[in-house]
Length: 419
Image: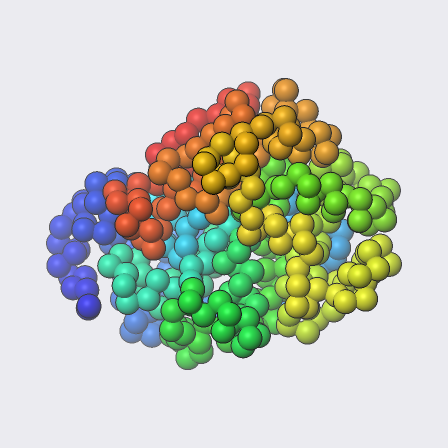
C-alpha cells in the first residue's frame, strides 16, 4: 500500500507511525524527507550524516588498517565511561532507533549527539540485531521505512559514534543472529535457502542499483562487520553485553579449549580475564566474517594459538560454538520460565561472573537482547537484564504501542529502566 507522506506531514506532532511516543514523533518529518530524497536519487542527510553514501560507505573500510590487537583492545572493551546506556534489538526500524536514543537523551531533536560535558562520559551499547529479515518490506507502515533503511542505520550509527568521540563519548553496536545470517546468506545460497523463511524479497539499494545481499557481501562491508560490529563487550565496571546468551557450560568449554589463545592474549596485552575472553570471541567472529568472503588473513595470524579443529577447518562455514551461542541461544533468558531451566542464579549468572573474574557483589551483570519481553525484564537481583522489548515495527503485534526502552547504568552503578 502506497503511503501518502504529504498527508502525514500535515499532522504534527503525532503521526500515525509514532503514536504518542514523543521521542519518536520528533523525527517523523526528518525521516520522511530522507525517504523522499533517496527515492528521487539523492543521497539525503540526517544528523551527523551529511550525505549517505551506501556502497561508498562500506568501500571506505577496504583499506582501513585491521589488526588482532586493534580488535582485542578496541572493539568490545569499555573503559573510561562513567555511564552506560544499553538497549535491545532494532530490526531495521530507523524511527525506533532514533526514538530510543532521544528518550535516553543521547541525541537532540535533529539527530545529533547530545553531549554532557559536566556529567560522566557515556557509552551507548546496542545489543545486536540492527538488521531485520532483509528489510521490513511492503508490510511496513512506518514512515522511516525505505529501501536503504538498514544501510542508512549502519551509516548513521557509525557517524554518530564519530560525533560522540569528539566529546569523549562512544556508540558501540554489537552483532546478533540477524547479522550472522544476513552476512552468510549474502555469500552462500545454501544458507540463504535454509534461512529463506526469514528473508523477504531482495531490496534494491537506490544509487547503487544493487541488491542488499550484494552490498553486504562486498569486501568493505565484511571488513566493517569484522572490525566494528563485535559479538560481545565488557565494561571496566563488570557489565557484560551480548546479543543472545552467555551459557556457563559453553563458556567454561571455550576457556578450556582456547587456553593457548587466552594465555597469549593475557601475556601480550594488559587485558583483564573478562576482556581477554570477550576479545577472543570477537577475534573469532572477525575470522568468520572475513572467511565467508574468502579472506583468511586474520585466521592465519591467530592460527598458532587455536585449537586443532579450528586451526585445520577454519571458520568459513561455521562460527566457533561459544561465539555462536552468544548470538543465538537463550539459556539465561528462559531461567525461571515454565519452558526454561530453573532460576538458579548461583549456577548460571553468578558462575559466569566467577569464570570471568568479575566481582558482581560490587557492580556489574549481564545485559542481553534477542528474547522479546513485554518490558525490560530482570532477575538475579538485577544482575541479569533482558532488554529486547520488540521496539521495531516488525514486532507491531507484540509491542502494540510502539514504545521504546533502555537500561541506564549510572556512574555509581545504579540501574534505571527508561522508556
